[in-house]
Structure formats: C-alpha cells, structure tokens
Image: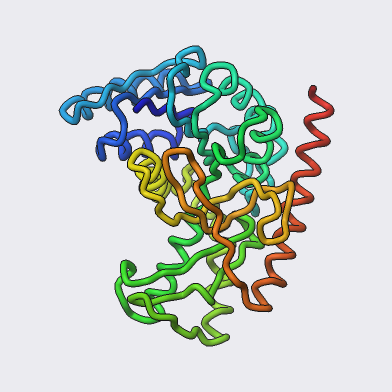
Length: 310
C-alpha cells in the first residue's frame, strides 16, 4: 500500500504521515511538499527513522513519484497572510493549486483514491472532480472533524465519555454546517437535546475556525486531522465499510447535484461504497438548504475561475 501526502511539510500533512505510518496502514509513504523543501526533507528523514521499526518506508519526492500510489491525500494550500473568519476565504487562492494537483494525480496515478483535506474541502473536492474527470467514488473530502467536535460537545453536556456518543454533521464544512441532533445517540440510544443547549453548541462548533485563528499560531487542527485521516485510510485498506461522515460529490442524494457536501457514507477499498440518505427533521432540512446554497455559490466561483485560467 503506497500512500502519497501532498503538502506534507504542513501542519496537517506531517502529523498525518506520522500517524498513518505508526498505525502501519502503509508500506510506503511518499511526502510531497511545496516551497518549504527544507522542512519537507527534515520531516521525511526523521519519519524514515522513526517508522523503520514499523516496516514503513518514507521518502520525500515530487509529482513524478506519484506513480503506483493507492491513496493520495491532498493537504496543500496557499500560505495564509491574514486572520480568517471563514474557510471559504481560502477558496480563491487554492483553486489553481488544487487544479494542478488534480491534473498531476490524473497523469501519474488515475486510479488512486483521493482524499482532499485542503479548505474549503467541499468546493475543492468538486474542483478535483471537474478537472480530473475522476469517478466520484474515488473522491473523499475530509470533514469528519465537525462530527468529532459535535460528539465532544454532546459528551460534555450529558457528562459521558465521548466514545459512548454518536452524532453526525452534514452540509458545508464551515459556518452553515448542519448538526444532526436527530442522530445523537448515547450507547446507541437516541437522546433529546434541549433548545438552549442546541443554540449554545451552534454558537461554537460551526465557527471553530475563528477560535483557532485567534491564537495566530500558524497552525490548524493537525492532530485531529491525523487521527481522522488515518480512520479513512484504515477503512480503505481493510475494506471495512465503516460509516464515516465526509464531503462527497452529490448526484441526486438528498435531492442535490453538482456540489460536494458532507454526508454519512460507507468507506471501503474502492473509496465510497454507499452514501447513506437519512431522514432529516424539518429544521435540519431547512438548515441543509442554506448550506447547499452556500456550496453552490462556491462551485460557481470555481467554474468561473477555471474558465479564466484555462
């Protein structure tokens, strides 16, 4: 199993490389960076030694080395020069970067499963679909952190361990995300969440990027992403069919087409095995419509920009 990580010098790519290797989910990890080649080479050298006892080969390379990759994780994006209020602010600068990466993957490993972890993940996943003409089942955009945070908030409210909690977030990986309180479970049993608590959770989880940005640390949720990305790799490698929320290209599911949005899906060796269409409550349906409209506007920007730079 060969896994390539693009943007591997960054605060998402490097932790992902370490955790995937430590979990022995790959025989070979290819690390591709951008301008910070010194950082990339240092990470690759250190990880090569660290993971040698696990039987995992690690090397730094470039796009020509993508051949033979089974999974490609894209974490590459433009450097941030301002404090962000929304992930959507990253879209204009990341369109050309993601277009080039999509074309490189198509050229060197067209059958690979592609996991996009560059924000905003939904529009960029759809861009990858457009520019690479991939089968949509190959394409997964990473958005499970929203569900992790939702479960964490529910566990805190009900004063239980997080591993007892289920809860899923759909829609945009951003401010209009939809917290499915109808999916909340503790030990597999449905629970009711009062309106005050719902509002309190909605004040925090969808806007978590603003909290991270306030630190001005130049980092994002790298450790969370490392755990989450490894869960997708594990599901693919072991063909588990595990339900993992992620942003996928829609073709009629939930009445939606021509965008990529977060949904519950079963993941296996071919990528997306099945998109699960859950029955939503009336308020969840209303919120999802707002989220879909937001994502559709972003896709329009993607299409216009692609026309300009093609």
